[in-house]
Length: 302
Length: 258
Picture 1 (cartoon, each protein chain N blue to C red):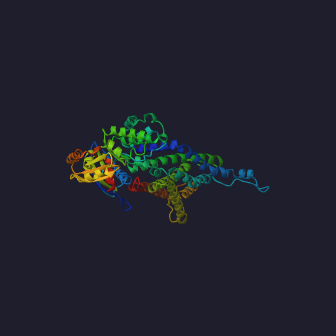
Picture 2 (cartoon, helix red, strand yellow; picture 1 turned 120 degrees about the vertical axis):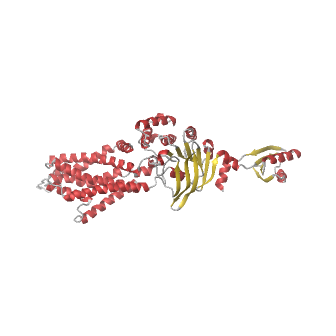
Picture 3 (cartoon, each protein chain N blue to C red; picture 1 turned 90 degrees about the vertical axis):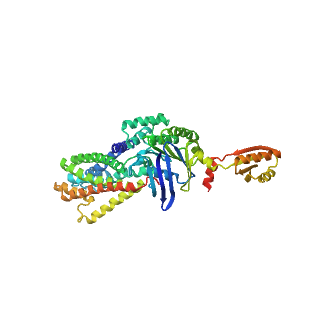
């Protein structure tokens, strides 16, 4: 079931289209990464979904919301650089925004305590936010986004600005939150997307260039490629490989021959047959899978 | 209730940044400054010296109603400036810093957001103004003569309407620009322009908001409320409400992030 359905979403600033007609749906319970290089339009997209920016065109439909209803109650949002009232304590802020999200004071206090515990800043709950470290603010930011148990949690670059320790903590936290709600988070770091998301939306120049589950994208973009390394002069073997019928293309990289083939099974048989027949001094024979990194680079470069 | 939540948060904020302490103190100083210094002018001149031998210094002839009007004159300059200064970042500041990005993605209506902030600033100004004017009343009564409670409170409430207008105007500019300094400038320039218009056209527009204090002077002298004062007060209230409604519409058209 879809939580949110986006159709032809466009945002233009002074005639300049930053987001150029997005179409996608988010499935309930999924953790989706909005992946793209800086300037791809990720933040603008999230801000439109959260209601902070008005779309120039297109529609955002929230499942279960009637037309014209305030969809902000269903959404939790963490901006890239969350700013709080520095004079408030962490707990005061959570109770404040909890009440703004229609919780009673009692419920807001209860929920604030739970979340403070969960994001591991319970000890610092009565300290002024002005004294919090970057990682603590980020975690408080996640807590404030979760305070009203939203159906969709949107996080804008939740880990990009954190040190490795803070990054690990927030990723673990997101792993946990995945069980409770649908998450859409943006990142320009592929590793983060790969680690916790089920689905990817790859954005570039304001458009979604790839979408799907991580597995399906890997599969789709996998090229059949072998990497071979030899003892002695490698180039002579490249010539001989080129003569094999099953091989499309070869190139040398770092002293290894990369062989692009049509069909993995046939190519493996053919190459190995040839290798045994003419006694090649092979030191490496490897079927390489394209990583998502390759995919990301490929998609972004095109 | 979201309105109460924001209202209370504003009170707490102004408490933590000491506005609830210094604004009333500043208002006391503004209100009593002129009546007291006028009364003690001869002594002050004497102690400063430089007057020719034999000069007889007599306190200027000031009646109590003139003395208390001095407080209003100061309020309409310094007081207004203080009011604009404490309200200039109430919404603009939150938008500029980015807190608004967290607050306004919560299901809060913009009118709740605006009106709760407006009401809290009104409460702060009302309290400070009341304390300041009570102090002024005390000194005027002591030094110049009697001001009746009836005179005092009618003066107090009619002039309060003008101060409400100042707050509403500041809130209005808060929704238009998000640089607090610019809010201050725009508000002060608007009030100065209105005051100039008032001086030029006062005969044709007796109901103009800036004419309220002039009408109050008349009211104290004649001991009855001039019709024009009712008119000016009504217009000022209508304008204030209009500004708040306009603020709501303007904020709705604004994007809460760039």
